[in-house]
Image (cartoon, rainbow, N blue to C red; front, top):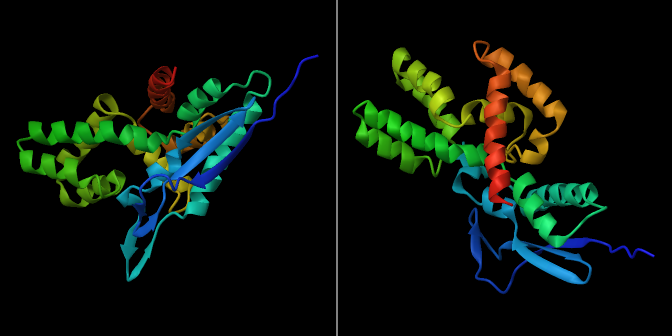
Length: 238
């Protein structure tokens, strides 16, 4: 008779570690505990780390706001439940760790760094080294997509158009991903996970977005580029 084991998990504040600042509030880091076959693993919440970044907390018109711990726990539950349900027949903690490291990732976050590097080189090549450094350093505290949007107002059209056009060949597909995500999500949970991306309905909506905002681009080619990035992530988690 084959014996089956139940998978259980919980999110908790790891009070064995030093407290950290979560958008001005002092708290213990959020961790996840997963138990299976009398074995348990512990790891830091990916979404706690992601949404702790300064750019997810904004202040405007005397009001301020950002993600809550409850928002983050909800995101954790979604991806963990998916992985457990997906692997009921061959579940293991090693498999769980690999799939968590893949499906939980935010596409906008993982493509952002490469896009910042692209802008740094672009402005260096244009003889604007101080702007290049400012963009690289300042983008840590602001949403890069919004920075590029302001550039459209500040730059002359040929320079801006070159920046955007070249990005489709020299940078990760951050701009179309973030623009699409921004239209489908509500502040402050501005993220697009691998789990969400692999839903066929998401890709259908992304195709519609590309046809509307980037009609001169081949949506399928852009999605293929995104999938190449995902392949790299998957290899890193193997």
